[in-house]
Length: 347
DNA sequence: CATCGATGTTGAG
DNA sequence: TCAACCTCGATGG
Image (cartoon, rainbow, N blue to C red; front, side, top):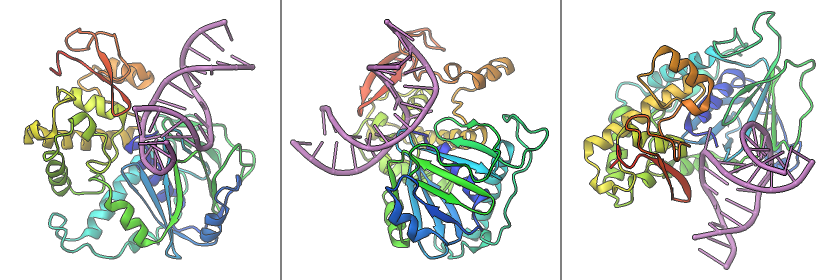
C-alpha cells in the first residue's frame, strides 16, 4: 500500500475538494451499502490522516474510516486538485492546525475543541496543474486522478459524474467532485469515540504530532523494546506511517543494522530516525512519491524522479552493488516482509 | 494471456 | 506462521 505520505496526500485532496460540501454516499459494489446510507446527505467537515489511516468527518457526528491496505486506491474526478496545489493544501492545513492547537503545543495541555475553522472554507476549485502534471493548457473543467501507491493522471472526462468502473466499495459524490474507493482493507463508519480508540492505538505521526512530543513518544516506546529496530519501524503502534520501503531506506540512511534491538539503539539515533521520518514524510507529501536518496546531482535527481529504480539506496536492490561501498545488497525476511540492507555499511 | 508479487493488516490455526 | 483480503502493474510465454 501507499505508505504514510500517500494517505496524507489523499486526506489533503479531500480537504481541498470535498470538505464543506454535502455528500451523496453510495456503494456501487454493494458491500458498504449500510455505511453509505449513514453518511449520505451529510456535509463533510474535516479530513485527516494519521499514519496510514484516514478519517473523514461529517456534520452528523459520524466518520468514515479508511485503510487502503496493500492495494486499495481512491479515484478522484471532477474539480479536483493536482500537482502543486496539493503541496499548498498541506501547508495551509499545518498552519491551521498549529493555530487551532493554540499556545502550548508541547505540553498538550489545552487541546482545544474547534475544528470548525476549516469547515467554512469555500470549495477550492482545482487550480493550475503543478510541475508533474499534464494537460494544463486549455484548462479542462474536470479531470481524473488515481491516488494510491502511485498516482496517475488519467483522461479528462466527457461527463460528470463518470460511471463507476469495477468494484467500487464507496462513492462519495459532491456537486463538483467524486471519489471512488476500491480494494480497501478497512472501510467503516465510526463515531467520535471510535475514532479516538483507533487513533489511540497508533504511534506518533510527524504530520500530526509536534516534533518534540512525537519524538519523545517514539524514543520512549522504541527504546524500551528488545525488538529489532527493523521491526519497530514497521510497527504502527510505535511510529505511524512507515512501510516496507521507508523502513529499509531509513535504516540505511542511519547506517543502522536492522537487527539491533531497540534497547541498544542509542537515544540520539532514535531521535535522528524520528527526524529523518519527519523529513521523508514531508518530502513524500510534497513530491507525491518516495524519494529516499539525497545529495544527488541535478541530473541524477531528475532521473530518480522518472524511474523508481533510481530512487532508493537499498530497496529492491538485492544482489546489486551498494551505492556507497559496492557490496552486494542482501535481502532477508523480517516480519514477513522483504528487508533489503547493506551488510557492510549497516554492520 | 496467465501468473506473480506488492509500498498492509487481520485473524484463524 | 500463514492464508485471506481483492487490485493491478510487471513479467513471461
